[in-house]
Amino acid sequence: MKSGKFNVVTDGQFGSTGKGLITSFLAAAHRPKILTNTNMANAGHTAVNTKGEAFIAKVIPSASILRKWLPDYDPWIILGSTSAFQIEQLNKELSETNSADRLIIHKRAMVITAEHKEKESSGKESTKHLASTMQGCGAALAEKVMRLQSVRLAEHYSELQKYVFNDTWTRPAKIMEDMSLNDPFGSMCPHHCDSLHEYLDCILDSGITVLHEGAQGFSLDINHGQSYPTCTSRGTTATQNLADMGISPKRLGDVYLVLRPYPIRVGNVVENGEQIGYSGNCYNDQTEMTWDDVAAKSGMPEEYAKILTDKERTTVTKRIRRVFSFSKRQLIEAAIVNGATKIALNFANYIDWSCHKQSSAEFLSKPILDFIKMIEDIAQIPVACVGTGPQYDHIIDLTK
Image (cartoon, rainbow, N blue to C red; front, top):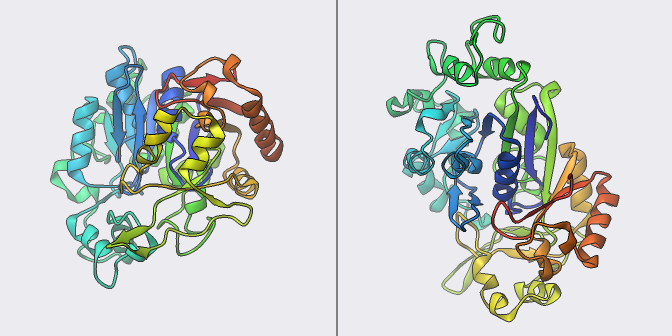
């Protein structure tokens, strides 16, 4: 990860590649002082510690939990302008991570209400036919874009005022001071920062490292993804993450493209035995598979193979994920559009189970090494780390 830069972890496929695992691993290894994201309620990221304890983040960056798990790491958290969350879920995650005193929210972040969820779940504006997560994200975003008089953003909620950045707020200065900088708004910031993007630029100008956890997958991008309308409601690329945080491209550091050997899509919606929602097609060099196929190809033990399907449920909808063969076309597009500099390969144990939960390169068998060489040759960028299990120490670091 590049020091003093805005580093991004982004998904190179249809989502659920394990960005929570990669982000928590990178944060634990590099200790960036600021963690950022622009998550919406339709995505959930999971971080798992060395004891097997899991934290599921739907609002704040998943690596925020490291403040609780690691005694010597105390990051600040910034939610960008395109974040969309339920206040109850935000409070739950802040409580779980003990991070309420470390949070900054962009004033134009969106609050998702019960009405937004209802719009997507039923009636003429329902997104059920797309196998959407139906969490109210698109409805909230549409309301914001329409600029209706009834729109209420984060800045309009009294309970969020202590987190929302504004030009009279003292918490930004507290960050500078907390980072052992003796002159909070002096040499670091030659002028009073009236906006969050201006403040972030000062932070980066001072040499402070930022790690941004992207949400959803490149192939779901509303403009550049694999298909429309079976996509998400916004842009998901690394450069979109920069724009959403108000960060100049000159501040971009490493872009970690997270992949899995067998990409997934969210499950179709089936009610009373009838499919009423279809999550979309795959690339033309892919075929749809079953989880039994994956288990057989990896040499997975029978006891794990029996529960694999149940484990492969999405964090938000709890539907069983659809699974596909690897697409070279998908990788090429994702690497080019995102400007990826490194690859994080997750679920290597689905290639060869012998590496399951390992952290040493000696457990990279020939099938895994062949797969790594194949994706490096296609993307023309190196594989930096390999995920072999759910915990953030189940990573083989190839940069050492």
